[in-house]
Length: 346
Image 1 (tube, rainbow, N blue to C red):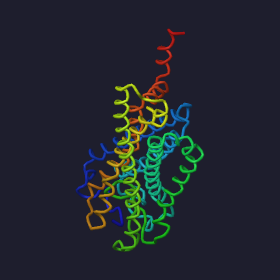
Image 2: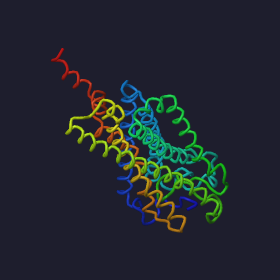
Image 3: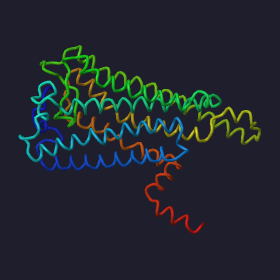
Image 4: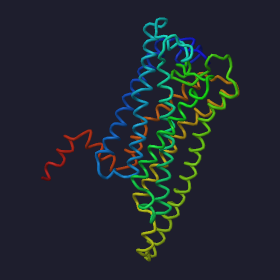
C-alpha cells in the first residue's frame, strides 16, 4: 500500500463509524498511560534498589527503556493522527495521506517513528534473548556465573543490542530507494511501504523479510534455551527432592546446583519469552502474508497493536512472579501506607 488513501480503509475495524474511532482513541490513551506508568515503575525499582543492580537488572532496565519509547513516541503519534482525522478529516496534516517519498513537506514524522518502533521491537527481542542466555548460564553452569556474567560485559552487550537493532531498523530506507515510510490506513501506525514504484520489487521484499527472519531466529534460539534451562530446573528439583528424602545431600553438590533465586528468575524470563513470542507471531504472519499477496487489513491492525500492547506487560509479569519487585513497587506507589504499617514497630 503506497498511500494512506483514506481515514480508514473500508471494512477495517476503525472505518467510518465515529464511535469506533473514539473508542480506539480512548484505548490508545489508556495504553499510553499503562506503558509509561508501568515502565517508569520498573526503572524506579531497578535503578533505586541495590538488590537489582545486577546484570539481570541492567537488562530489565534496557527492556523498560525500549518499551517507554513506544509509549512516549509511537502511540502518541497515532493518537494525534486519529484525533486530527476525527475532528477535521480532509484538513488533517499532509503526512497522514502520503508516504515519506511523496510528501509535499520536507519532514515526515514516520521517518522517525517507524524506525523507532522497529528498533525498539528488535531491542526487546535481543534483550529477552540476552536475559535468557544470562539465566541459562546461572542454571546450567552456576559455578561459572560470577566470572562469565559481569556488569561490564552486560553493559557492552546492551550497547551493542541498541546500536545493532537501530541499524537494522533504518537499513531499509538507507539501502533501498524503493522503500519509504507511511502512516498506514490499516494498521494505524507508521509502517515501511513502497516508495514511488507501483509494486514491491523482489529486492525490497527481501530487505523487509530481514525483520521477521532476524526476529524469529533470535526468538527460536530464546525458546530453545528456555526449554533447556527449564528442563534442567525440573531435573534438579526432582533430584533435590530425592536427596532431601534420603538426607544425604552434600555441601559440595549444593554449590554446583542453581540457587532458588536463579530458578525463580529463569521462570520469570520464560514467562517473558512466552508472552513476547505470542505478541510478535501475528506480525511475522502478516509480513509473510503480504509477500504472497494478501493485504489482511483488519489482521494488520490487530497484529501491530497486539505487539505494541506488549510494552505494558512486563511490569505485570515482574509484579506477579517476583515478590521482591512487588514489594518495592508497593513501597514506591504507597509510601504512606507502608510507613503506617511500620510505625507501630518503632
